[in-house]
Image (tube, rainbow, N blue to C red):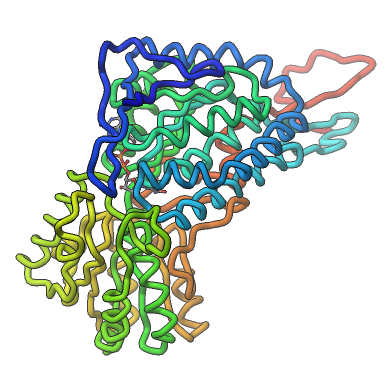
Length: 494
Ligand code: NAD
């Protein structure tokens, strides 16, 4: 059986943690398909050291030539699109077209990072004082690390490393232990594109590898994406060790549905946003706030669409929704369905009846009506194909619910009223907002990040914030005087 290990110094390498490995399942049939090695502290330190050794030379490569490596990498990913999409499908379970979409969204960050010669330009002021000029320089930090979740095995790492290495840093990636194969293939393609050995390393593992990254004195910054409890832990531990941190956490994204919305459009948008990728997206819509009397008409639209949803192996043509990532996660999502029913919500569609005989980790689309804010299925992130309808009296009470929720990743309003939509964009306490757009993931040249307990740290990912996160600024003030006299008072510009 294939054991996925680590990628250090330009090649795949075995670890030293004796026989420590975890199974990787094929979610579509429930069978173990491979194993992943778990790095020891020494393995992780070896990856950090490789990145450290590579830093000096890489940081001196001109931004233009760093960008040229990324241009070649982009072409290679495009040439291997089918292979990569299939790998994602096999280890994650999402449908093939969705995996391609993930790759395209990741490549957009590579495209943004190809503009690094322009993005790194500092500011310059001639004559900040008489005969004095000043400018700023954006320099790389050194070794930086990324820790990513299972749900986007390529896109989330691509939110991080293209910009980090374009800025002149070297990188250690710790992907999810559930599906490490796509990132290992990405590492090979980076080497093939001409990236020097040690600039991008992959370490597979669990908490031991992560903790080594968080505490190591040679790691300057940590980018994390995953669940909120782990994000909070990463943020506090890495900060305590003096590192720059951006830690993106979980979500509970609400769609505010006004009675004036086009319901055909809104219900189609909801199908993709709630059930696409089996609801395992941090920007998935999991709650609809149905204002006034719109809920019944919405349910009438949704039910036939749910009945027609094609659930199955993501590699089979025509499938719209694949399995969940693991048996444990399937059980957890099912326990939320139990909880919803026990706490009095109305289960209009119970996905547990879909492909119930399969060995794969399948769960059909599930729809709850009559959900209230006290219920567990409203408060907590389910991360599965479970959509909750909360009936609310008016716009103000819907807005208040969103603003009171502990998470603030994404949200959307569906309405025909520009005035209301404008108020929503202004007033809502959420980091990413859609107007008639259900999953408002910012494009690569903007930045991605939530508010409240969906993000720990001041800077969002990719876009301008990505460049800020992976660089530090140096301010230079220069003059060339013919003579200088000693001056003991606070210097001011003349
Ligand atoms: P997770 O938090 O379990 O794991 C994320 C990473 O952290 C993995 O690499 C894992 O190995 C590591 N990890 C897990 N437990 C750890 C611990 N105790 N100590 C140190 N490291 C640990 O998340 P997941 O289940 O892989 O992904 C799903 C979660 O990610 C959801 O909550 C989802 O909302 C979130 N997510 C958020 C965003 C966002 O942009 N905000 C994007 C994608 C996913």
